[in-house]
Image (cartoon, rainbow, N blue to C red; front, top):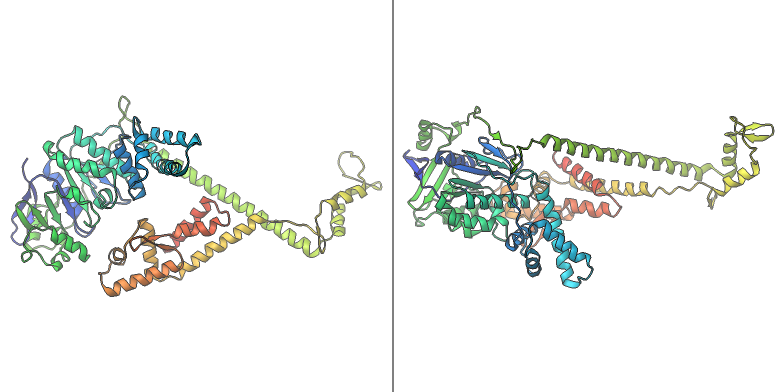
Length: 569
């Protein structure tokens, strides 16, 4: 294959090209120009490419063909083990032997789940073995629905140019399954295809397993023989598994702000220490400016966007034109959408609108239930008021008098003034009324016990307590809480300094973050996890406090969303 034009050397304006190979592009998102670099390389390579969009609201790769997510079910031990480890974020130990037995001869994840259910249903499993089966049952119950109801295609159709596979609506585990299936299918059946793996730290993690790791490593070792290449996109290198990186021959490294990541970047530049860039040069790289390390040496390059003419790109590289003056045109043709194709079946219609309507109907149903619950609560309030009134002023004589007022006298007896009715015995009627009135210490009173109203009062008190605690937080404390809730994972204090508060690492900043985390821990909306990391615990806090008063999952979720909405103000 011919070399792929990358851009122009900073200062000289000379053309810089790279050989087709596996490569990695690093740099801070939205600040370095990683996506523009990948898009330009793909278009100038004249190869097909599959790009995965994994983040909600991601605006990268707006040109191309959107293809349906592809998945091929597997049930071999290595695959299932890596899938469970990706879900639990920890390695399996005691479950390994049992999982091997369950996977032997199985045809799908559903069959493995059925085997686990059948074993537990016998009631003969005890001790540690029962615990293992219960764990596996829990893992599979959460993983299988993500695959079964994901509306996935069993055919991988790849078109010329950029093919975009939108995985925004899937969980991280389901995204891993789909990327693994696509990589395996391309490696075994296709040629001249580039696979772009986003968020490499997520899908090739260093500390735990993931279904993508084994197949990506095989792809890197074997794919180049058929002109199949992997382009890795990573904001940083700290959490990325190093085994596949050892096989990557082209490194394109952009702007970094955190000093540890700057050091990692400098370590990957194959030059003597005296000739390497300084730390401040990495921390001041402009958008689109990268250090490119290949087998042929190291160069500082301005990567030419696919939509930018040569003359302007050369001017930027020579410093004659500001990077900020280069604006992406808004008249680019957007991507097309390809429907799911089934083997032996006509092209399936797009049912996304129907699924959206189903979700809306479901939400409307739960809203109606909530309205009914509110009405019931109001009834309890009225009953409570009746009880209070009865305790204060009502006695048996008054109640009997009011009942008698509702009846019409007729010929000395009591009759309902409609159709002829039997004569009512007044004494017997009064006696029955008195029997139905509970006796109290201060005379005969009504007694109504609105337990549901009491529970609702406690739930409301819990909600107001948490809201009050959060409203008293400082703006930085609220910002850190929002960041931890959105990450939904263990976060190091250094990450909070650089990626949440957008500050530089230093003693004063670390002290500031420690105080913030201490304040959030004091109101129990953040918890400390192993390795001196922190995780948001707002929802568990709500579950503990409201669950104590019989709150439903829907009520807990409503309170959680209400508090999050307050944080966005």
